Image (cartoon, rainbow, N blue to C red; front, side):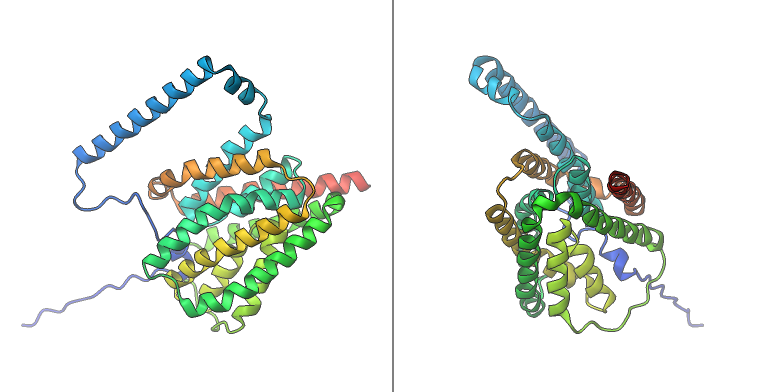
Length: 325
C-alpha cells in the first residue's frame, strides 16, 4: 500500500516579506553556542564600561570639553534619542525612518526644508552600507538600478531645490508636508492591518522611470517616502521582493546624497544640532536594530508608528488652521 505524502506550501505575501530587512547582521547561526553569546555580552559590557570611564575622565580632566558639551543645544539630545529610536523602528520593519524623523522634526518646530535635510544626511551612511551589502549579496538588479537612478536623482534634486526656495514660507509649506505625512501614516496603518492577509499581485509595472522621478521628488519634499512609494509599487507590480528591496536600498544612497547636497547648497541656515543628533543616534542604533527586529512583532510596531505619525500630523495641520482662523 503506497503512502500518500502531503506537501504543505506556505506562501508569504510580498508586502509582508518586504517588511523585514533582508540583511540581519546579528542573526544567530547554527554554530553559535551559549558560551559564545555570553562572551559577546561580556565584550559589549567591557566596551561600554571603557567608553563611560573614558568620557568621565575627559569630562573632569579637560575643562574645554566640559564647556563645549554644556554649550550644546538641548535639541541635539532630543534628536539623538529620536534618531536612535527611529533607526530601531526602521530596523524592525524595514521602513518608516524618514517619515517618523520628518514628523518629529516638524513637531519640534524645524522648517520642512531643514527637516528633510537632517533626515537625508543621516540616511547617507546607513543606506550606503545597506546598499553595498545588498550589492555584494547579489540582491541588486542592475537593469532596474539603471532605470531608477537618473529619474530618482533628478526628482530628488528638483524637489530639494523647490522646498529650499520656499523655506521663507515654511508656515505654509509645513501643513502641506504634514498632510503628506498624514497620508503616509494612513498607508502604514493600512499595511499593518493587511500584513497577515494574502495580497493579490497587480499588473506588472512598466513606467519605472516615472515612478523613480515621482518617488525622488516626493521623498525630498516630504523628508521620506522613497522606500514606501517605490518599493511598495515595485512589489505590487509583481517585482521580486528581494531584488526590489536591494535595488531600492542601493539607489536610496544616491538619492539621499544628492538631495542633501542640494539642501545644504540652497539653504542659508541648516539646523546642524538636529542633523548631528539624527546621524549619531541612527548610527548607534544600527548594530542593535537587527537583533531587536526578530523579537518584536512588525505588525505591532507598524500600528504604533502609524498612530503616532497620524496624531502628530493632525496636530500640525490643526495648529495651522487655528492660526489662520
